[in-house]
Length: 82
Image 1 (cartoon, rainbow, N blue to C red):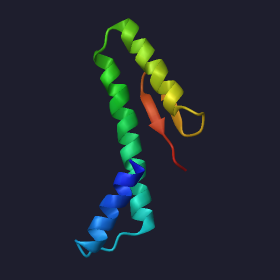
Image 2 (cartoon, rainbow, N blue to C red; image 1 turned 120 degrees about the horizontal axis):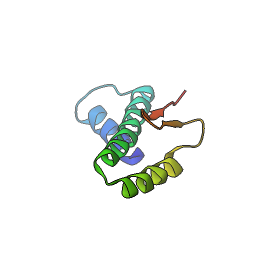
Image 3 (cartoon, one colour; image 1 turned 45 degrees about the vertical axis):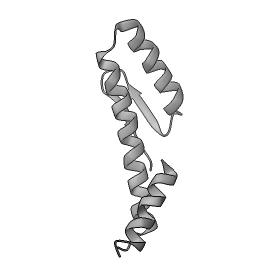
Image 4 (cartoon, rainbow, N blue to C red; image 1 turned 90 degrees about the horizontal axis):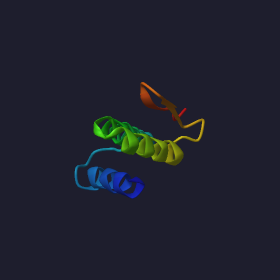
């Protein structure tokens, strides 16, 4: 994802003649990661209970480090990049 966001920013800068700051690129990457985590969590809503619990545990292990992502049992993930 990081490489893709950097590549898209460079394309905007060189071909589109748009100024793309490091802050904008970082913000885009953060939005993409948040979106990926949220969508991955939302997919589990449509799974059978055993598979749902297993997948949610896997997502929790992958993304939750205690500071970056907080997984609420009802609300799902809340990504905090601050």
